Length: 350
Image (cartoon, rainbow, N blue to C red; front, side):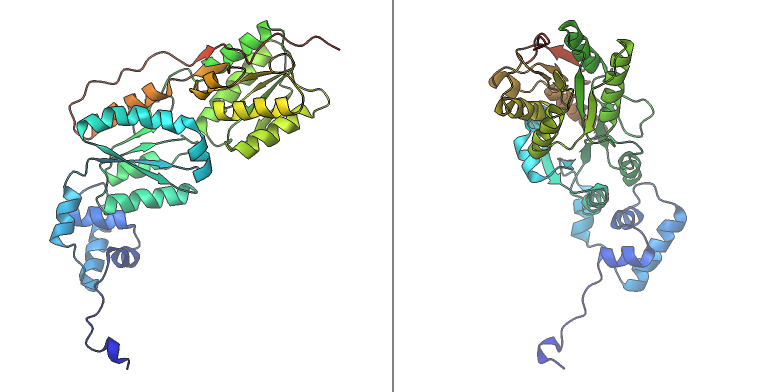
């Protein structure tokens, strides 16, 4: 026997070992032991039996920590680090959140994840470890499992997206999500554009579906169909690639509509490098109304969705769910078009 191992006490069983033995998540173990959340009596008994068999019990300090308020809110984002660093959308969102959280002594815990499985596992771990009081969910998806998961974990949460009374957790965002896109197309139509291409975000995102449906309905109402629709992620490389592809079409579009301002700015640069003038040869519309749209040349025509105000409203809604006495969130109106210099009359035939 290795002498270094002689006399060493056996390793203390962990909450993960109990979860594996009971066939549940670590969050379910925490709920069973602390009497929180929503789990069945059969599951609770199975967890407690596994804990007894393994000789596991939470330490007094850990239990006290879990029951204490952490004054920490999780913001989990499914984006590569380079996208998060280059997209001012999240800076605007965090500014809105922090403007309400920081004065009340709450901090924001930011995590980046690769996929839904990682995100769900992270929530379970953070709840089991007692590290957060609530969570802000981004990128609402079709058949999204996160609201039901967090409700089951007993964790207050808000989901950023168009209001929906049937959601398991409060949804915070501007209503009439398609209104801004319809207004943008109406603007292009008045300028004489008939060949319009639409760059959409990932197909599984709810706002992608709502905006694309509004775009196609607006075109159909004018007796038109899109020159092209391309789904894309939000990276700079994707913006460049999709712009080059659309500009190479035999019947080149005279206007491009992008899903956010960062991609629209990349699209303007790509068009200019190819020898096209914006807006003389090509009109470009973004979405978000971020500060960078006012800094570029030409200044960007875009749809304002009040990102900071949405973040502030989400923070207030979540603080109320955590038991704080806060004023009700103030968020009204709808996305609206902001016309600047990147859109102009359709170019004359040559």
